[in-house]
Length: 270
View 1 (spheres, helix red, strand yellow):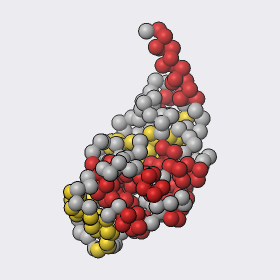
View 2 (cartoon, rainbow, N blue to C red):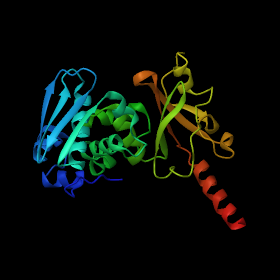
View 3 (tube, rainbow, N blue to C red):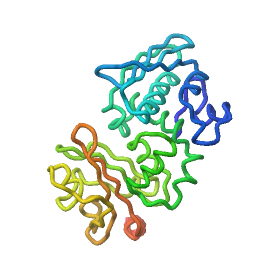
View 4 (cartoon, rainbow, N blue to C red):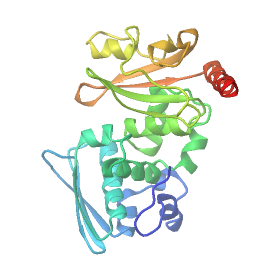
């Protein structure tokens, strides 16, 4: 879903107004200035970025000690706050908000989505991600092109890549959030916590886990009927605040096809 700002423009329309057509031209400072916001960099304690605005101008302050990729996404995120509430905005955002706020419908999720639409625009992202495996190696390649954080790029690869996929964030308490591609969303459902044979569980338990991707039985991640009869691929990484993010994807789409057939047959029985 594409976010719309309070002036009626989508991020895509902002980029069109500025004539931006290539990833190398996605200058967050220039984009923010066009939208009435000045970006400055200062050391911050307790947050990664903040914004203060009134009427038609705002100041976005970004932690000068963050990585270049985090600074860019922070700028896009705060600009999302500003453009969705043009007249008055005061927000203070930390790393956890950037990583975890992708599923619940709240201001932080909407700001994350605005930043993704602005700095990882679908029109540019789709051709560059075409036919790439849904792995962190692919994410790193795309993140380098767009100069963006791995988490935001991973979500974009799930949403606009060539394969059915999910990105799942887990911690010791279980699954915290997930994002699914349109071909999977509403059809297959992740477990509340990954299975014992997964790379994610090994990482959460402090065990050494070989770099992915790994072939896993689908029932180690998916709760749907007969999931033990199918295979998926998993690539997991340790992430912020003791969490693990996992890319899972279906190179073989037979589970999805069979699930659709099962639902159609069940519907006809009713």
